[in-house]
Image (cartoon, rainbow, N blue to C red; front, side, top):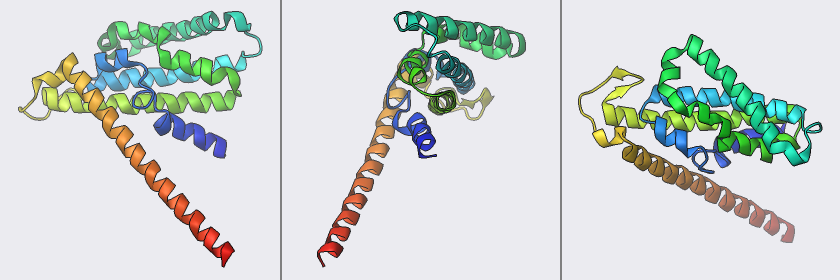
Length: 215
């Protein structure tokens, strides 16, 4: 259970692909001007990342080490093709809003990175949990920044107009870059504060235990 808890916390917080590892910046900067597009890309990555992790983990003893990267790309490309067909058929608005970024999932460093760093070294259940949690970490980060950029940059939220006041720059690539940088700074600061408090508490407990033993 502790193993799966660690995988979960790593995916959502300590190894968050967007805020901590700074991976997948191309779709991040390209799509966070719209909360709908950001969330749609995130959920698509969740599905593809989870399925690719499962398949790669299941085939890890079959895939030759010398050609593992091309094999990973073939698996991911197949999943992306199915995802594109599904979205084009059933969610055309999301398909249009994602544009060329959808095809770029094939070489998204989050998916390839988890395949190489985790899926090919762990069991299928572990790889599945890792895929879901890493994908959710990416989705939450993109959606949060998408909400900020759309709300303050366009005065709307998921396409619904909320207010007239807006900061137009935040709806542009330069604004997206600024929001991304600020979110990374705030996220890492909060994590550092939590870790610092945890270390102080652990040291205090250790000192108290030492005093008890001496007494």
